[in-house]
Length: 63
Image 1 (tube, rainbow, N blue to C red):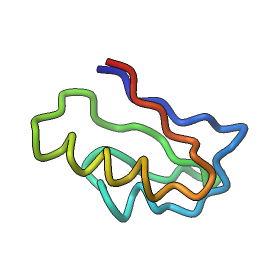
Image 2: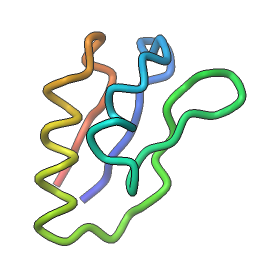
Image 3: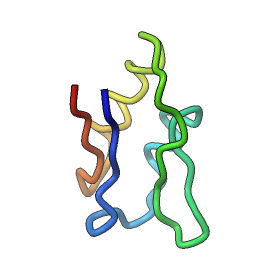
Image 4: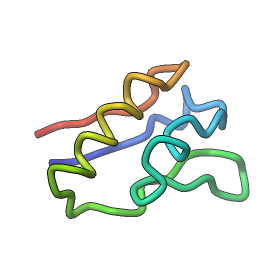
């Protein structure tokens, strides 16, 4: 599974970090970054909530 953030869409609202702080962080440019790649079922559920909460739909999950 690959999680990416489209930085051309991301506006730094940090909704993803609120939903899944183990997976996302906001960098110095206020853009979300993926910091975890090995996801168990609990983290995957958090990522799915983060995807739904992103106001710009900037998070992509490819299996």
